[in-house]
Image 1 (cartoon, helix red, strand yellow):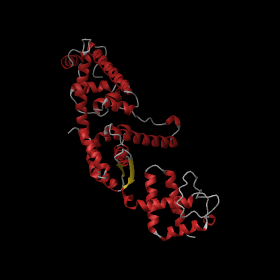
Image 2 (tube, helix red, strand yellow):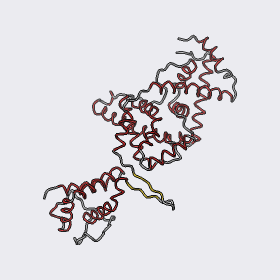
Image 3 (cartoon, helix red, strand yellow):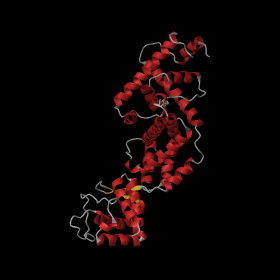
Image 4 (cartoon, chains in turn brown, yellow):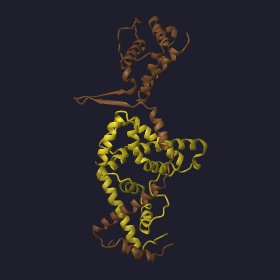
Length: 186
Length: 191
């Protein structure tokens, strides 16, 4: 316990002039705050001991993340793409078109494959409630093609991951349902 | 080269896919982010996880980072959000297991809680700062400990710069009066 009289003396020397009610009081408080918190910060941060493997763990996790890269064009417009998909962008677009064509509701039930449909305004059919038997022969054929080629499935999985990582859950769920359908045995 | 210029160069490298540049960017902030998380969740392991998760989340959304804000302020905000998420989860778990009138209080107060060997002056002032209301303690912490700009503090607290300045002024006024009271012997010092 520090005696009050001793502290009063100390206060007078350390924070001299505080009793003068003028603007310089704030300067004294400001200086004291900077000095004191700087000392506090140095001591507190020096005592924090993070896990030795902190950086290793972080780097390992970073290795599994594919960063979305933004390319800025001279006109200021931006184009975003995912690094692993750069070399398969054409396939990805093809997969999207195929998936939209297959899984977009068509009232006339006409063959849709090959028409390059992009009816994004049409609600996708509910895959959970749709059975394989209800699909058109064309849709079944495409599903069979998807099953035959693991590359297509891998591409769709990438797309699902890409959408889920970018917060586009609806599209990710749709692709997931599609993959589930493809993985089923008929 | 200023810190901000260095940050911008590192950001360009990161956006081009350089993960090591990201490590270089965030390594100086680890301990300060950990301190913030720890002050909120009161647990070393949870704070460690929160900082890891925050740095991963930061990396994932680095393309959305606004260069006008400091990288540290941005990561600091992510740490706060993740800490709040954890506190909310804990609260839900407590609500399930304990009756309402027995719920544990989660201390989210900002401040300078750690007992450190400080000089007499610093120790005295820290004690006074801890007596301030949370809104004043918070701005003191952000301004003097985190060394954030007024604009960054305003952004973080979702208020305008004027409010930040006004709170800081008020905080210093209160501190000044506390010290003067002690000097006049109106309040017993060292208790």
